[in-house]
Length: 342
Image: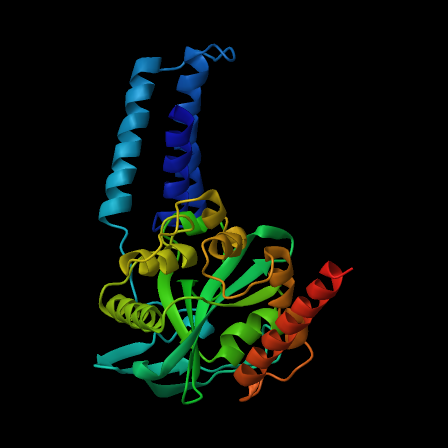
């Protein structure tokens, strides 16, 4: 507990203090040193030189420092939407809901050639919720560690429209996404509402991450309710910005928030949900993935990144994407039937 408090205090100072990096680092090391000296002296881990303060006073100083940092961290470090954001996250979508019609000003539609070579574009679109007929759960895994992934959802409408909704940590311009800083109010929360050829294609064709595109099994009413609930949440962030947090306010937390809020079978608080790269396994065993294939076969049938690397990211991308997973699922079922008939 002592070391956890020391670590949190030092990291909170380093990542959130509005000061020069060297000054934040010095203060963080000073706090860590006060905690460390007290702990080491009390447990006689090493012979410390004679210090001007007793262990009791250093303990008090450490706790006061933690309290002061907590007051600053929770009371004064607040989201600020007026910053120079990373270009692909700079424009927050504006959402208006009028009955079954959801109007979105700022659907992202970038044309990506490489991670740094792209053409920015946005369009305005009105979606008729009564025409929503399909939902997909997308897992974009980290290539070197399967347990970590970005997850988001896509929707399809009978009028031929498709849209991706991706909950992300909004970064300042030039600021990379990093795991430890994401725990300490370094990023803000944003709902990216975008064209699938942009949001899905970026991860599979440009970043070349493993991407799994799973059809969701649920009622049409729940699909529509989830879409509207996500749009309402996106709208609320326009007026009430929030911080992104790797554990408590991330892509997976927000998807499960919408599922739990709307009832139905609950998504458990599970390590496999915390490790988002395994969340598709949880969704499969809860019956949310619309397939009769065994999980291992389904995972391969709905993997689409290799296909994306051989197809253009054009206006017909979404239709071909759905045809591809249908073809791959049918092939997987045929192979399984052939294997079982032997």
